[in-house]
Length: 573
Image (cartoon, rainbow, N blue to C red; front, side, top):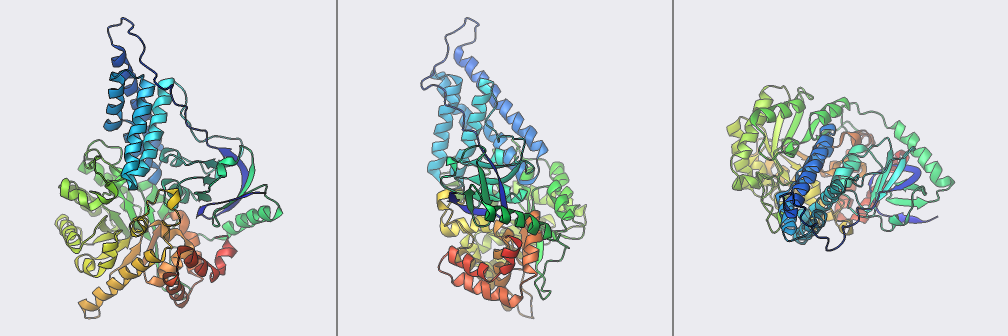
């Protein structure tokens, strides 16, 4: 028996055979050159460039076709990867190498290496995009060779997928009826792999060094909560997996009323990426939508989508929640979500660059047109539509966004708290807007200066970090201060959480104790979070929150809280 330790990102205990993700395609021979002219009148370079562009277009079409069958985050990831397949920077670099004599395969291979290396050197979100480039490069080479691209393996029985890491396009299309758990040697707790695994409800462990030593058909035990993988499981592991199946079945369906043990209300909302997600979330009794990612309407487009197209997309979500709150995040473009008509791919540090709300300074009009479409869709539906801007750093930006919302006829403007400055000045932001929502994914990476996609930084990039919890507390305290300054017994304006932290049942207790008013997560996580919250009194939640904030490390904070929540072990969480 041998154990591997990583970072658990989705709870679950399963036993099954391993399937190893096939290795990437082999590189074309170094120095491979163009063939000799064949007398057809078309030069070898022209023919190679044409075949390269045709292969890239084929890859784009295949990815777009898969995107058409996907939903939510998976759809958005596939559409973004489809755009990358014909990225002008990548294709132009390859054509330049072809004109210098390289074969089409060698040209796209070397161009992919160069572009990926450039993105890695930029760091942050752009470093993560390097994986997309290399994924697309492999797909184009496969198309040029006329062979299938490396894909997730298939098997006659359910299996545990083990990989170095997964390309976003692969992760987005995992079949949870075949893949029963996911283990990667790389990645981080807030990488694409981790987020999609949570959305699918797959037990998952990332950043598990050494797991590539495993071989196909090795039988292993995966503990998604503990972050461990054990080979040759014995009776204790088999019993734990059986108990998990029993416990999972005991998690009652959410009844639509998020609350603590004494009835204190804490709304449990859903993060969605489009109408299909919203319909599923409504069927799961989510109390509304805490985060509508509007990127789904923009990714995959070479030009800004028109008014009517946007209205139809938003209305599909609003119609799923008549009379209930739907919080719309305006376009969060930039960094790892570039758009050819909006963002600058040459920025030296895109994670700190023109992204989210900031794009309105360089491309004015796009945001106003989006708000007009949201307002039009809201006018045709009965949902209670709130709108928030991402990447707000100052009170002045919050005021500007509120003014744009007012001009569009949207009455409930808010902002994301993703930047530490927003957390520390939430009192002043809430003087200008009606609510704030904590995006813990970005707040964590900015607070800890740790790229959320990188496995080696997984321990830093953890929402249990006391520094991050302190920023959450500062945001809530700012709301209280703003209410006190307003006088006349004014109530605190809402402070929600829509980052991945809300889906961790133990961390949800801490967030409740810190005083947040709502939690938004993948709909799959709501029953577990609700069950745990209903076992906790407000007094216990506050005490655990105080201890977590005062802890010396993320590990200490997590262990202190979990030790006082026996319900987690009872439910296998």
